[in-house]
Structure formats: structure tokens, C-alpha cells
Length: 140
Figure 1 (cartoon, rainbow, N blue to C red):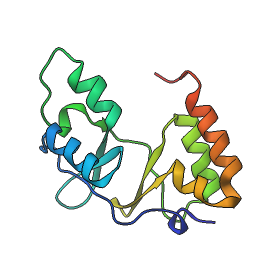
Figure 2 (figure 1 turned 120 degrees about the horizontal axis):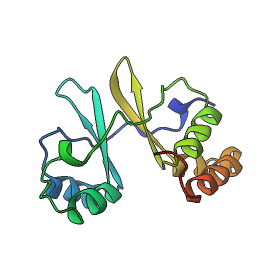
Figure 3 (figure 1 turned 180 degrees about the vertical axis):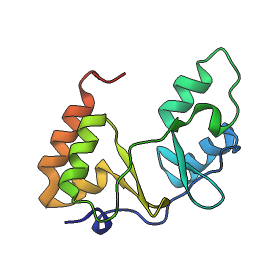
């Protein structure tokens, strides 16, 4: 199965100068834990997670008010034609729960660990990825 078969295509995204407060509101309204940050042309620049807001913005000494200040730049992403098994390996390797889907340099969707878990065929892979995410990171 391909990523395109499981990904969400209606993705809420923000511009680099979107305020952290507005991103938090988007997360609450859409019931999501991450907002991709894109250029006006739809190119993926980064991603802001709920954890980024807490760790990089609220608990920091500086007042970081915009997405570009706290986003993870160059996030791990997948192509819509990638095999979902390969995507599951990326979830585990990079200890992430969400993968932006990029085609021709533009954001086209989002694949989440929950998307894998919803498909009976991928419950074991989702469990393996979640187990790997839950281990202490060895990446810096």
C-alpha cells in the first residue's frame, strides 16, 4: 500500500510569520497536534508541533512569537508513492508521529501514526513504530 492511500489531504498549514497563538488555536479547532509551515507557494519549510509550542516557546526565556522561531526546519517527509512500510520505518527511526507528504516540493498531505493504526494490515507496524518513538532518542 502507498502513502497516498492512507494520508490526509485536507491539511491545515501556516505561514512562517503566523503567531504561535494562532497556531495553537488552529490545533484546537482542527483537533491536531502539528501544523506544517509552508511558503506562499505551498513549499514545506518546517513543522510546529504542540510539543514545540510548550518546549520551545512557552518554557523558553525568549518570547518566541512566530512559527519560524520555533518550527522544526526541514522535517522528515515522505512522497505519496512511498510504500507505507517504509513510512513506518521512518516514524520509528526519527521518533515522530506525523510525516508531511511532499510531492514536487509542495505539501500535498499528512501521514500520521494513527493513519497506519487504523488499517488492520498495519497495526503491528504502527505498534512497532510507537514502541520505537517511546524509547529515549539516540539522535541529536
